[in-house]
Image (cartoon, rainbow, N blue to C red):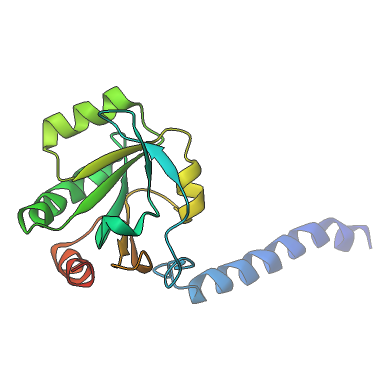
Length: 170
């Protein structure tokens, strides 16, 4: 009886491992939460990187645009950067939000790689990211003329995905 009792914790551990492995194999890792799609831009006010002036992201007069959360410490953001530069060349308005980044580091990142943004805002403490539901950078949101979020993309933009989002932002 003592031998059976000794193996009981191991048996429970094995059963739990099988259950969790089965669950994770059925889960789609590409599923992205799109909770804000179809809703207005959150009422977030952030400082401008250059001037420090407070800017309301929810201002509908800003028109259609992409909102891109990025950071100088983010390797995927560096991979995405040429795609953003291409969007700027196509006259797509992109608002960059420096997520949990020190302004001098953000400025250095943009000086080194180029500045694709029409405006750069600073989310030093990450509160705007929480309001948007950011799960990690980079993340890009499409905002329509009416201030509603039309789409969200998590991860570095590919040229094809950038073109799709740019069409929505026009």
